[in-house]
Image (tube, rainbow, N blue to C red; front, side):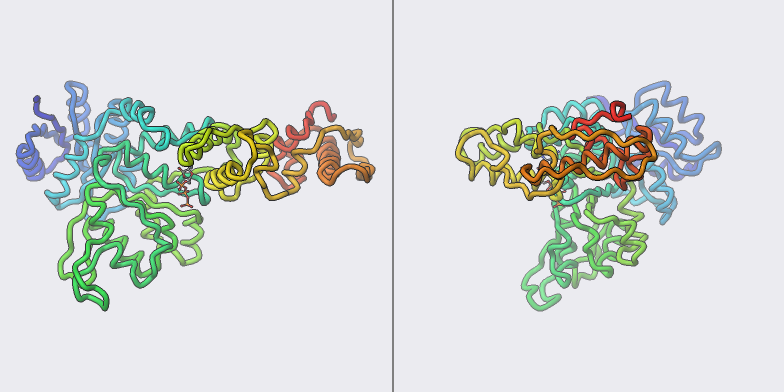
Length: 473
Ligand SMILES: Nc1ncnc2c1ncn2[C@@H]1O[C@H](COP(=O)(O)OP(=O)(O)OP(=O)(O)O)[C@@H](O)[C@H]1O
């Protein structure tokens, strides 16, 4: 096998030598250069398997090289050497595309781990192909542009070691996304350890995360490894991180920064190599403002953030998710796969899913269990009746003439006392929408503002009632 080649960019001769010797022991040839210009020339002249650059160079700064490599050699992993404790630089480098960083003075263990991880990285196109190879159960399904963009981001993040923070409402797929980042990256063969921080009693959090020594507290009858150690070499997924008590946040920050943990009752720290992915359904920034989450930890775990939109903002994903979930339910129960009637799908399409994909899964599971046939009907879904749901299922037979612009508010449509509640609500909504759109001369942004809804919500409501803004004028 040919030896791997690494490009080392640093103007300190001692450091170049140290890296050269360390990498030579790993069977890697290190080519050292001292300036950005020389690094660019080397990169253009031959392929490399890894690049390590110092931050401060005589002719510029290392993040410029990170950008250059990310743009021209996207498959080349590049890591940054930063001054000890300079987290700002490390974070800026990772945001620019560096896959990891190592602090000065160089800890050779960290350097070796970083190098091994870099050499395990798959080329970008292989990562994208690997997504398609995963079983459907491990995939992020959906046709919406938001999910498409998310899939691209996951493939990119899998290639780097930066901490990722995932925000999204409950049930949107945060854990699924974290698993994908892990599975598509160089740590895939190592453990993925999910932890729900909110579910661990406060007094046990430290011992659960970092482990404990026998006798360190009542009940500690033997040494126990913590979840950080269980995830060594792999990924620790800290779900609901906002629920961690403040004193624990300090210890977590230290563990992430020092890449070491101290079990409760232990004298020495243990080195750990763990990629941390965290998540919360809360807005961490707001938690920081309220003093409930430490700013320094927020800054450290949030190097790259990723938001999963709620299902109601990507309704086009509902059909594919429904097909997949119905197949999964049938598989688990050993029965035939149920289908959804057109009307039931329409009903789902107008429901808001406060519990997102998990709620969709529960609704379909209940409907499958309770329905009489293999085709699920709207009533089988047993959705809570909301004004929206009621209006969505109402026939669209009631029409109202548009009010002339700037006329006094027109009277509501005459109430047909024989019509159902849903039909009557739909008629009222139709009347309000028609009147406002007309008054705003079909300017939907203005109409949305006047109605206190988002433009997307107004579009959706108009489409649902089969109203065309251009026809209203
Ligand atoms: N886009 C998707 N494609 C396929 N399955 C999905 C998708 N999104 C979510 N799921 C499924 O929905 C369920 C909930 O997802 P997950 O547990 O990842 O959500 P979460 O955001 O971590 O929830 P919580 O905040 O409550 O922990 C899981 O069964 C998951 O596989």
